[in-house]
Picture 1 (cartoon, rainbow, N blue to C red):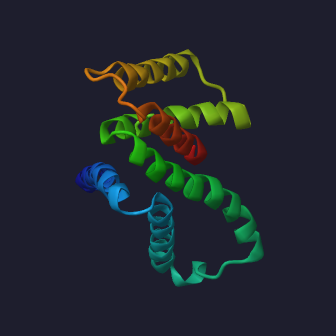
Picture 2: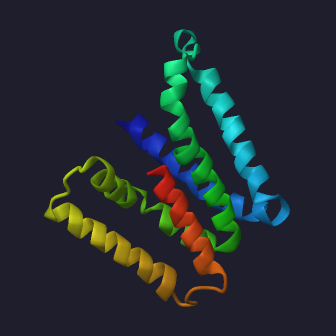
Picture 3: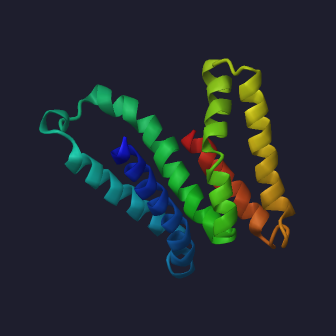
Length: 160
């Protein structure tokens, strides 16, 4: 169990640093370049980590992977870097924390997965809390921030 907690801590640290670093990177580099670089490097790393027996891709594999690659990876990454260039890291982090809520919503819409009363209440609280933080913070929505927030949310929907 301690290894699981360590893995969660490392993952959350990388995730938090990722948002801040990405914000600074978009000031110097084109968002499309950043998204493309992240997709290609990550794909190569994950491919290298595959066991030898699973490195051979068949046409059926590509047919299954392609839609996920376009929506869950390419659209998500492009929306992430475009969104972070127009919003604050704090807004981006809060919106990204809604991924489980968006996933539940997409599962309900696409595969008609049922969501009980506690799930619906949790979804409503998460969405309301996010709107409160993003739109009603001490500084309110910064100019241009709403557009970045919406682009970031579109990336989360694509990933979900």
